Image (cartoon, rainbow, N blue to C red):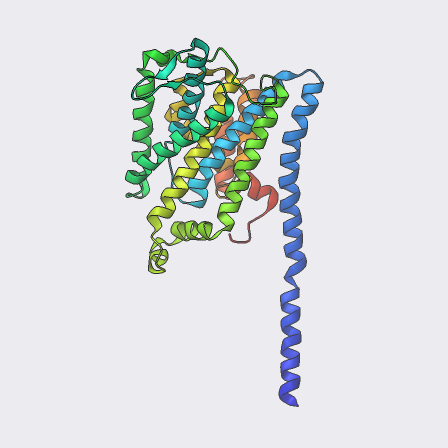
Amino acid sequence: MTNNTSLSNSASRGTTVDAAPAPKADRHFDRKGLVQMTLLGLLLLLPVVAYFSGQIYYVNLASRITIIAMAAVGLNLAIGYGGMVSFGHAAYFGLGGYVAGISAYHAFDLTPFMTWPFSVPGSDNLLVIWLAAMLLCGLLALAIGAISLRTTGVYFIMITLAFAQMIYYFANSWPTYGGEDGLPIYIRNTLPVVDSSDALTYFLICFTGLVLAMAITSRLMKSRFGAALTMARLNDVRLATAGISPYPIRLVAFVISAAITGLAGALYADLNGFVSPTMLSWHFSGELMVIVILGGVGRLYGPLAGAVLFVMMETFLGGVTQYWQLFLGLVLLGVVLFAKHGVMGWLAGRERNE
């Protein structure tokens, strides 16, 4: 009887202990979800309001934020979730841009891109361009990752930077496609059914791409592959002892990361109607890294929050002073010192696995 009473009391206490954190977890979920939905909702709503108010500039600004956020989502998959600090993601962003620019160039001139060993014509079809950009960036990342992922730490950073700089100087010295002057895109690449030349339509295309990129990242990280990638970041030795090699896991994540960033580059080139070697420079790789850190490394919505903050500071402070990067540096310093989990960590609270 005593034992049964004791067990009953223990179970009762256990139930109380287990049930207590539930309201706290719900509050945490509500806060995080509210911040995320507010951020995404404002990004969708404000350009629509600006479009019907005749403020096309702000619609294009929202498109730029969305595209840069997508590129940062790709980098965040490598850095935040995989622990691969790549300083060469501008190579994939720029390559995606050049795929869009070169394809449009040959479609405008009605000339093939290559004639041997088979003919490859130009195209102004966005679906074809996006697919080509993602495939080429994925193949480039496969080659770069196969070499660079055999190293770690600062060596990995420098190898990815070295490959990106080689591609930058190659584009800089390629006179056929503008060299250092860049390549203008005379025609807006098209998409079946919808009018991609309309500012709001193009924003919605970019917004859809961003949402899909975040959804793919979320699905990956909730899968067994995501669990293996997280363990490869935290303790690759323990992952190896479980019978899973960290190398192919990291390589696949690196390739997917590059493909997402390459798609963003293709969208960016079409938005601006221009592509140049500056899209391939290490400066842009640094900007992407700053955006990820500002928003929150390893946060799904971190790249979006970081892109909003970065582009807004660049646009509005840059219009007031040419030294706007001083204020960006102060904000970045504040985030590193006082908000270790970035803007999203500050607004939405800590993740449960942190």
